[in-house]
Every structure is written in structure tokens, then in C-alpha cells.
Image 1 (cartoon, one colour):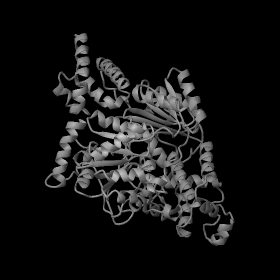
Image 2 (image 1 turned 180 degrees about the vertical axis):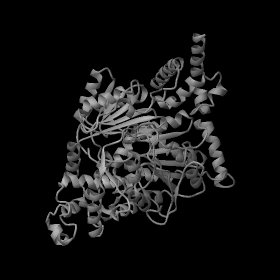
Image 3 (image 1 turned 135 degrees about the horizontal axis):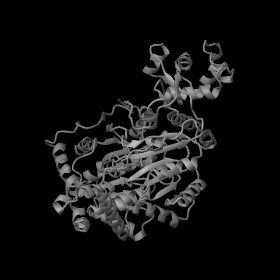
Length: 633
């Protein structure tokens, strides 16, 4: 693959690690040792070693990695090897604060500049950065563009410039921030340190924008992949949404989860309903008083078994690794938002579940928001196509993961871990209508979007159809027996099947893929679904749509010990005013409950326990394990 110019692009994965010989390889060997000693990880995750080797070898890097794939470590660990300061641009205070807390728990000198600090604290952090006492300094782009801060940072020795959530630089992206546009200029003012830009949500057009706007010379581009195989994907037409959400949450008793809502009112109504059913739920939206909003976030981060009902104001800054489920009570904004929001689940790599409810009213609302927004017409066209891609995912006639990955330019086999793979759908032969749609695309030069093509197929003599003389085409009126709504659904489904692709650079027009040509010329047939957007068309099949919980294979005594370990973790987190996972993530506690280590050496072999955490918490948790053994005896 190649995008955005002549930069080299690498798809990384298991078994493609670099040679640890001289130069960057030698540095990588040191990094591997620090990985175990400081972070308590026994090996890199897929893609991390290759990215770090390139960075340590002096190359600039663009890293596209899935949410929960370990992006932060790709600059945090090289920061410990660099002679100087690593400056991290991060868009949210919550994200900065949580990452700093994690680094400090590992004994790493890190700080963040933000409005939640006092003026004295921010001044002290800058002095530490200038003097070389800090290894990592986090700052929001809105603060970094200030001339007075740039002057101070020019006196610090900046070795590495890390840009997190780099998709924010792209006007094609779903979370554009104008301040990101100045980062290349600011990097030059700071002496041009090595640059690593990272994101989980960047299609081809967005990647090209990131390269053009952030990098002076072509970087090494790593696309680690977008697949999160531990997430079970499910989508349902709305059929009593509150009840559907309640049923889904109940299947995750005692687990932490997020329910995304379309409005502030819905967050509060759902929280009240869940609480009334005995489930601890807290609302979160921008309209809450700041103190209440902060308390609700703190409870979610520090305690187990809490559900947050939230607008999209809650999410990007949440690094909690043990979120076991994410539900959408209404259709998300677009496919990138959907991918990022479900990515809050299962960041520890253990099984997690997702559920998205959708209906015609959701689609109308999202389209109205696009049309009534103040974005330029070109951006609105892009947003329409992105919404169509999400609706196509909802209506997909094949494996949802295949459809989702195809949107990001990846291929995959049926996953066996989504509702369509597990339950199937009602299909009919859709080859003839698919050929009609493909023929309309081909005969108009692959230069038009859905509405124009639907008008041609339905024989609608619109102004545009007459102007381009498309009323003279053989395909004009060939599909007039079907209503326009059905043709729109057919276009979404053939998109979901990979027969057509969107060209954002040409205003979201449809182009025919090689697979589409096979169908167009009669060499392959295609099946389409008959139940699109019909509430009640498919009923949930109880637990079949729910992945097994991470603790399912624990014995009764191990479950009891795990609860004691979690209680102690919560107690320590509250005392330190940090998220519970900063002490230890669930995965570490589950390993403790299974292995029951007898001493510090054995405890230190578990996932996520480096020397700093062993020194700080080792005896406390070993004491609980010994007490449990004595009680059992």
C-alpha cells in the first residue's frame, strides 16, 4: 500500500521484528530490557518493536495502530533512551492526566501542562523541563501554540516530538482541530526534533493529510492494522432500546462498561433506569456541573462494576483497560467515531462486547446534523459518505469485521466473533440489482454519488440528470420498480460487500472495485439482506452475542481471591487519587488469582509488574495471597 506521497509504508505483525544487532537494534535490545524492568511486560505487542526500531534509528514515524494496541509505549519507552525531553501533544486533559499518573507510578519523571493545574504547578513543570529533570512533558495543542510557551521550550533540550491522535490534523478526519495545523511550524521552531505521529483512526485520505501537514520529509509509515479480534461486534435494529440496553448490561454483571447516548437527556434517563434495576450507573455529559462530571469519571476509573451512560464528551481520554463492554443506544456519528468508541472496550486484550442499536430516526437525525452544520459543502459531502458507510456496516450481509476492515483498506476472513457470523441473516440473490447499480456507476464514468445514481435508476429527470444527458443512458429508469429507499439500501449493501469504494478526494463518488467487476460481468453472484432497518426484524439471541467474560475460567476460590485483590486495589487507588488500573489492571490481578505467587520473584514474573510496582505494592498483595491461603487451609 502507499498513501500521501512517496513515504515508505510497512504493515507490521507477529514475526516481523527487526534484528537486534548494531545501531537501532542495539537500542532496541536496551528498550526490551527496560520494557520488562520498568513496565513489567515480557515482550512487545505486534508492531511496537518495528516502530521503535525506526524511531531509535533516527527516522520520523507515522504509526497507525488500533485502539488498545499500545501506541503510547511507542514514544514513552524511546523517551527513556533519549538524551533530552520528549514533548507529547495530546488533545484532552483526562488523557494527559491518566498517562502521567501511570508513568509516575513506574518511577518515570513525567508531567502535563493544563488548566487543571495551578499556575505554580505549571511553572514548576516548565522549570523541570528546562533543567532536564523531566523525561516526558504533555501539552494540549491549544496551549502549545502560545508564543510564551514556545520560548520556554526552546530553552529545553527536546529530543522527541510525539503527536497523539494525529488524525486531528486532517480536515478529512472526524475530529479536526485547527491548532494541529500549526504543529509542523512549532516543531521547526523547537529545532526540528524527531517526530512520531500516532492515531488509531486514519483512512487513506486522512493518512495522506497527516503526512502532508505534519512531516517535512516522508516518514516511515507503519500500518499495524485495525482489527481488534477480542471485541465481539453486534448491531441490532431498535426494538425498545431501553430494554435492549438493560438486557445487554445485565449480561455483564459486575463489569465496567460504557453506554453511549445521542443526547444529554438520554444519558440521564438511561442511568436512572439502570439504577432502578439495581445496576450502578452514572451519567456523563458536558451539561453536568464540572464537579459532578469529574466525580462520576473518578468513580468509573477507581471502582469496579460501574456503568457510565455518556455522550461522546466521554471517551478519548479514557485509558481504563478493563472496560468489558461498550453499547451505543443510538447510531454513532460516523464509522471512525464508532471504531474509536468501541475501542474503549477490551484495551487489556481480554474478551469484550459491543452492541450498537440503530433505527431510521437515528439516520435522519445524523443526516440533519450534517446538513444543518456550518461545515463547507465539501466536508458535508465527506460526512454524508462516512455516515453511509456506517449504515452499510449496520446492514452488512456478511461478517461485520470484514466490512469494517474493508473500510480501512484491509482484507480479512469471516471472524466468527460478530452477530452475523454467529447468527446469520436472511439473504436473497441480489446479483441483478447489484449489476444495475454497478452499470449505472460505470456508464457515468465512476464520477457520481448515491443520489444521482438512484435518480438515474429510478428514471427521475432531475436537473443534474438532464444536464449530464444521463436520461439517455441504457440504465435510465431500469430500476423504477424499486423505491429510492430500497436503491439506497442496495448501494449500502454492495459497498458493505466490497463491490464499490468511496473516493473522498472526488467528493465521495462511487468507484467499482475488482470484486465489483466480477459481479458486473456475471462472473460472480452476490446476496443481499432483506431485513434492513426493520425494527424487530432480528431478535437478540441471549448470550450468543456475548463473549465469555475474562474471569470465566477462574475457580470459585480464585474468584473470591480476585475480589479481595480488586478491593485492595480500589482502596489504594482512592488513597492516591489515581485510576484503579494505575495500581494494577484487571489482567494482572487475574494472573495473581490464578498463579498465587509465593514471593516477590514469582510476583514479578506476572504481566504488568515492573520493579517500581513490585517495590511499591508487592508485599501488600503478597500478604493478601498468603492470608487467603492460610484461610483456605
